[in-house]
Length: 224
Image (cartoon, rainbow, N blue to C red; front, side):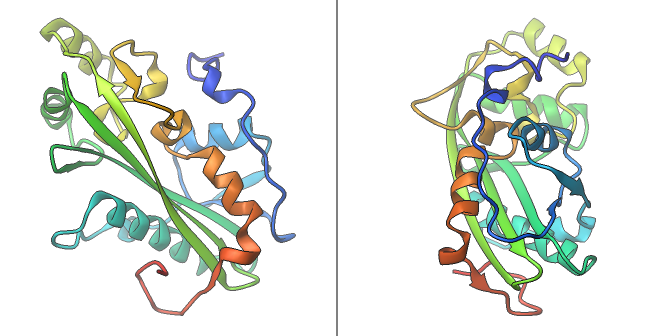
């Protein structure tokens, strides 16, 4: 069993009653999101959204606006590929001192990101979109978790960079990697930091019938 599978955050995750009889499709290639879904007891298949779903950042767009838009676009992209399905899409970024921090391009970028976060509080935002192909309805929400990163020494930073655990992770770190230099501030969602806020996902699924809005074909912005 991997360290991440043994984390307390993977235990006792909420499992919601689904709003339709459609099969769940996870619109993400993230092994961490799939792991969270499995831990919560959901049966699902994976169809990864096209890279184009995450392209283009709007000027003056905030981190919450961006992750909501990307989650919506990922779900919309996968919806064009299937005839039936309850699609769950998500996008996660970190934000610190006004900078939006996505996945690092390379090790140098990861180092610069971690040096920025070192000794600072920062936020992790995840946008979640649930899209019913059968009903042609969707809902989008954003969850914020505040984190504190302890000051990183050069040796701590070098060790983590050499581990390559930063690859593919927003903010160049993985909360699930067992780093004792990361802590959640207040009552924030741990699963949100990993990439999918399971508590909020369950609420959205339970309330889907009353909160979902009709999808307008061709619109690339999330409802609301």
